[in-house]
Image 1 (cartoon, helix red, strand yellow):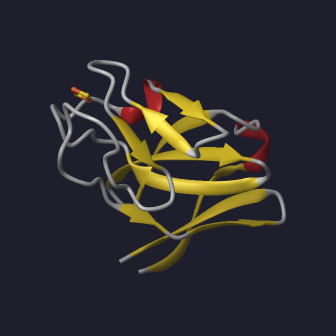
Image 2: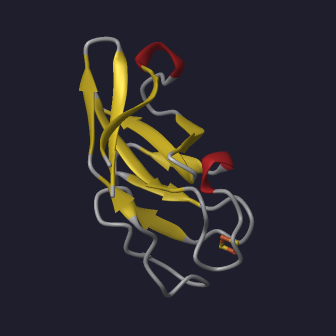
Length: 104
Ligand code: FES
């Protein structure tokens, strides 16, 4: 499927997270130190949207709002319970004024 425009960069301020739908997938976009990350917007613990969670810019993680599991924005690996399964991540980049995500 390739690279798809997921959002305008202006919608995603640094340290923020934004829930979007790309090619039928729910994806949480996060921006940390000028980089953009794309992680599935479905927590692997109880399917809660990660896009309402909180980004930790220093650790480059996102913490689920419901029960507090944290995931690496780079790898999707869970870093603390109650989640034990990783969340899919997708390549993301800034292209001009847009955030692009690569989905299969
Ligand atoms: S649903 Fe995310 S930690 Fe429970």
